[in-house]
Image (cartoon, rainbow, N blue to C red; front, side, top):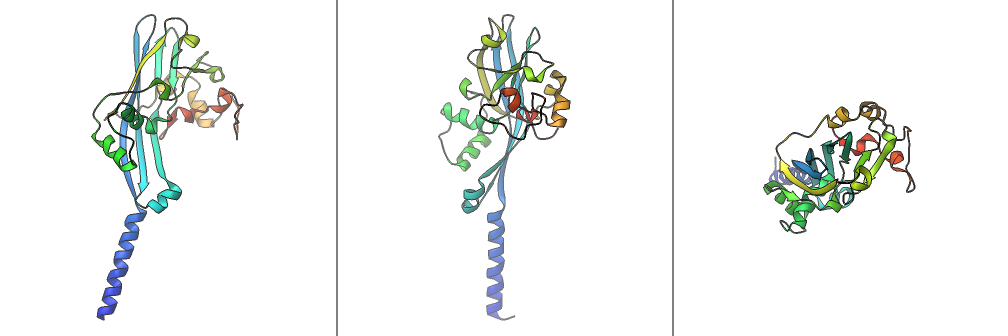
Length: 230
């Protein structure tokens, strides 16, 4: 083998290795626990759920320009039993950025690059307050046996749905080693497994499209509350 062929082969090997490095993703994974503190006429109720976050990002800025980052979630939203047959539920989205935004709001990190945010998540060991307006959507069922009875609950006005003496006083989020929450929704909602299997919307229909004027039961499916392994 000539010296020139050796140089060309070495150059090709370096090019292949570099291309492979650029085409592979960097991945960060963590679990985060969101908690709601709710004052009721009887007592304070604290309810939590854990969601696992997996975010992949290509090392190539060129590829990121077209594909961006991929976020995968596993777990369920919160199920909070307020007593007297009253429950409040949270959707699972937009949990993927909730811890990052809460840390920014608390002044623990600045608004930075993806790499800076991930580094802050890795080092995070604090319980952080979440602004109530940034919580995932909260909902309730006027009849726990009827998914079409779903209504939105405003975090600053629980009394409108549940009556006098119900207040959401605080919400927190933290990184945790706990496993993602599973089974709370199926345990609480008798129709959950049927709707999860069929993919029906909460009005009982199979909608291919939803529109701006669609009602909440027409929009929601079980995938709004749970993600990942079933």
